[in-house]
Image (cartoon, rainbow, N blue to C red):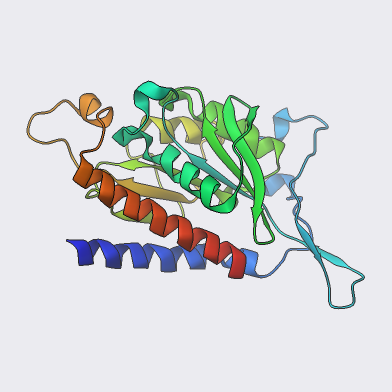
Length: 243
């Protein structure tokens, strides 16, 4: 099982590198056209963007990189810390710690950290409304920072995958996950954004699904999940830094 999980994680990394290929070639402007972004109709005159730029070889012109909004889903409060349903939060914490991006701002009902990985601007977010209302944070944040759909990475738990196994998709449905369903609802119903699913396995026997989701991991499960979080965090940061 270890080697199966390892190869699946490597496959996810390869897919992630392909998905991030757009950032290996700098864009000349990160302001996306209204037809390519969502939520514009409610913004009025507000236009705010995260930017990261470098001088060219002559030191005269600058290139700019499209930002990423990386969102982990979970429930706020100590009661839910370390539970299966909160692995999305844990991935954000891992990236925050490894890259020194402090989660020190509250905006749009989310705990937010703004920084960069290499030259790529990053917005990390942990929605502080409960799981079923996650979209109330994701939609407004992405609209405010002018992040195109293809640069919103949603991270959440997935029972259909074995514990500690990752699945990366460029788009998809909500799969009956209420947090994802809420996010899609606040992105004008779009499913055209990437998502990272972190396997937590199915409830044993006749165990209630809600009780299983809100249960903390066993020590063995925790080790599997921590290894997967650490590996993908390192892969993500390396890919963004070096393309």
